[in-house]
Length: 242
Length: 82
Image (cartoon, rainbow over all chains, first blue to last red):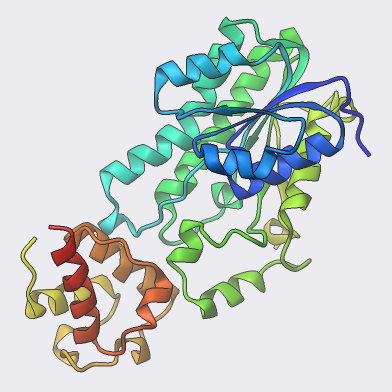
């Protein structure tokens, strides 16, 4: 068990598969958790019977981002688990899809951190964790836009780690491989069952679970990782070790 | 976009690497083509999205056998969403 009982933590993207697992892990570790997502019904379904504070927020709306930051207490941790994964070979890449990827995967976490800093909602020694992807460091046909958005996220967070180090605020990414239950992701929707099976064979430790990602995020939010900043931890069953 | 079968076949062939348009026709069972791999699936789905504004899931392709079946599927959705 990781000690998080004195910590207030905001999870953005909590109505997604990984965001939910991360939030549930934090709740089970007695953290004071704020869960934010666009889908209010899902938030209520997932967290209605928990101690978490639910906040509906459409990140594309600046006013809703401002409200989200206003609605939380001063935080010890911020997790960005929102994201989309539109995939296409470049010759069929839609500019609007690329812009959406950059907006939600790269720009929004920075905009939220900006607002949290401006409103003094991040305590000294707090921890910021963003979900990246193994795609950020892999060359995969059809992934140029998505991989670019995640690689840019990792680069931004490295810079932010240096920028916020004087405040003892740590900034890291977790880079998940594909885990069970991600059946609504763009990858799965655009991939045949046969290709999925061959993809899963690339994980030496087999297919992971959302809780595997959540455990790593909780570690980075805890004081156990107090000397870790500016890095990305792959949690991928050995995929990136090949 | 106004759809017709010959234009769809042309777009289909263009989407798949190393596929000669002259080797396929409306009755071609496209999922049995030797070039049909994971990138071909993604390319065809992306082509349909960009050219016809229809987002299909890979699993939907299993409901079609020939290129003409796929054309009919896209056409039906295209008609529903002018």
